[in-house]
Image (tube, rainbow, N blue to C red; front, side, top):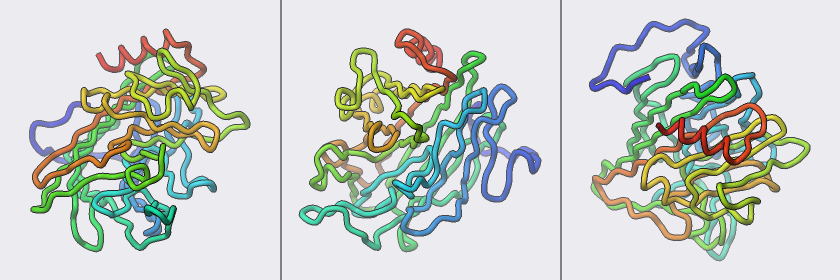
Length: 296
């Protein structure tokens, strides 16, 4: 799947691969994900497009949608809890000196148009708005690539532009007073199992050792699958990893870990995360080799 140099006509698709609200993502001829681009969600879930289920090549699910512990966790999505005070994450908003608070401040990401739509990926335009007012415009590029007969890569790029005339900023619960909760950006909710997943980077192991730190790649391993997340641009690699294993299984790349990210009028923020989706448990050398192949 190659992004077009100019808008193209939508290719003909069948009911098996697309619908008025979702499309199927394929890799090596197999369905590996379903992208909900017009989901019907309650306002307090901060409606947004998301991928679920995402599976390994053998069909093992590696995402979870609206789990009981966090109803606003939606598979793989771009979720930001504070864009100039608007919640694009879902759930309660962390308010300094008050804690998590239900507020009527939820925004939504609305699908606008396809620039490209192929079985193995797409290019999409979205509008981030609240109360009919657009704050940001996004260009999203997603592609699936086969790596081996047991591993494939999800290449996910989002480019956010402040098209308004006012300067904005991006924050997180951490920037609003909750230490260690610097989440917001690309976020992957993995499925729960009887035993929490393990997590490691090339030189550290365990949630407390990798959470809030930068690393070229980070591997989350469940009972019969491994996800290896890698920042694919210089700016993305500067973002710390947000990691949960015990409370729930999830990994994110954080835009505003402990300080707000300025977002001037006319500016664009671009992030690219490539995720290796593999069957079985990967050793460090295997994870590193697949990341190199995915990024090559």
